[in-house]
Image (spheres, rainbow, N blue to C red):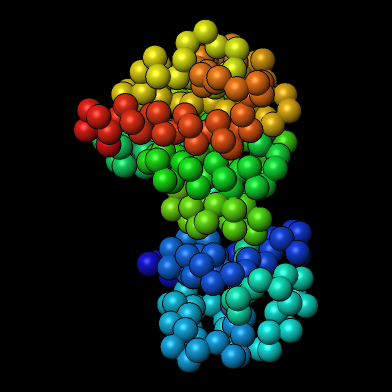
Length: 265
């Protein structure tokens, strides 16, 4: 676990979303030591051993700690389910695309899988996608700066801590990022319910960038034209399509199934 650098992290702009609460969510952030925590507040009635462990993690990160009544924690985060743990977070520190590509290559060795998210606006969808990505071995996430939910408390909680363990790069132009990935040897694969090819027929046993689209509009036409392949999820029900987070989980699983079968991951 690395200590925080000398430069002072910037607080998140939205005060309410700067707070992350819940035992698991807060402890995951402390253990990972990746997302700068500005302060930690603990319910003074927590078991002494829990307080000791949390304070030890915080001390390693030079994070100030306060023990306060549970009511005070509720007043700050407006959530009764804080479980005695409340953290005020700085702005999330994203990777650069260069560093993400390098890290993905080290993680996967032979065939990295990177997910490119086109304007996922719902923080709960974003968090759920991160959770599935971490569970199924996706090597990195790329998001754009416009029309995309930022990493905040809602994303952190819905990701079940995955936000602390996945490389996430934020770029100015997704089109340029896709072109860069293609130049690096990645196959560009668009998730589309209109695709002719089912996802189990797409080869994920190679470096691949899987593009997932906005909840309402799908993948932007300009990005879709850059993708050399498209993949759909076979369905037998009457509903036309899956939620983007559910679709991501299915596609990540299919990629893991193929890659696991060959020992590439």
